[in-house]
Image 1 (cartoon, helix red, strand yellow):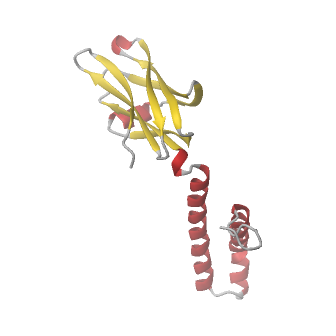
Image 2 (spheres, helix red, strand yellow):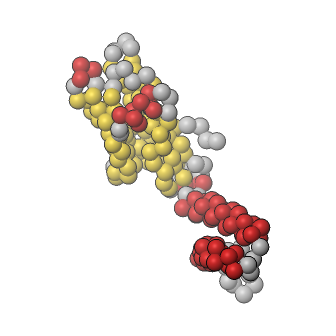
Image 3 (cartoon, rainbow, N blue to C red):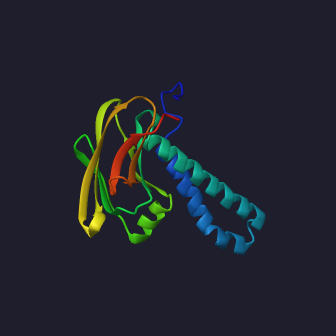
Length: 185
């Protein structure tokens, strides 16, 4: 929104300055309260206001960095995990590496128990995009296992949510890898 004079009423820089001024005041507040110039109740109210402003600032920053119309989020999930022990996932969007993650034993166990790990959050223009995930780990018979899965994504003005799903195929006794787009919220 602009004022009649053409200056921007909301400026992230102005908001940051205000927040830092309040934080500096809060850090200096023990000296003020010890001198008796400010009642402790007012000081506590001021601290709560700074915390609220910090939360608001984080929400605004998220909205500025990842606007809904260009937002894409990618998550990793694993079902069962008998035939595959995940080591790394490399995520490529339009043949460009955008994220790599090396998994610990603890993270593997969390995925096997049903956890969903956020892997990537970013922006994509509307249009056609190729999402490719490369999975590396230990497969059946304790052999190194590498596979890729791809999704052709038609990005619209809605946020896109992508799941990299690892499942066990009992019939094949091998892991299967899928890249799935969740329906728009």
